[in-house]
Image (cartoon, rainbow, N blue to C red; front, side, top):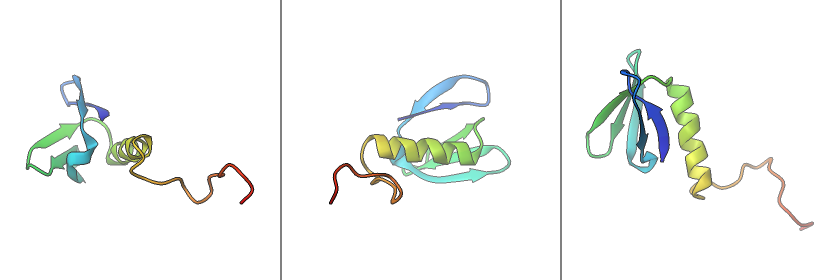
Amino acid sequence: MIQLTRLNGKSFTLNALYIEVIESFPDTTITLTNGHKYVVKEPQQEVTMKISSFYRDINVLSLKKDTEVFGDE
């Protein structure tokens, strides 16, 4: 889940697994797989970084290539 802010200043939590499209119109608009749309204050790049962090937290994305792996294999 990622924390975002609506244009009216109210924060909410969104399940990033259901995000299909992120666009800037110039406001950042997030479209979910079910067709629901959310317009948020955060810029598109920040939303993308939050999604990537969420995916790493739940182990959907693997470690980056430059990240050290424990052990001498």
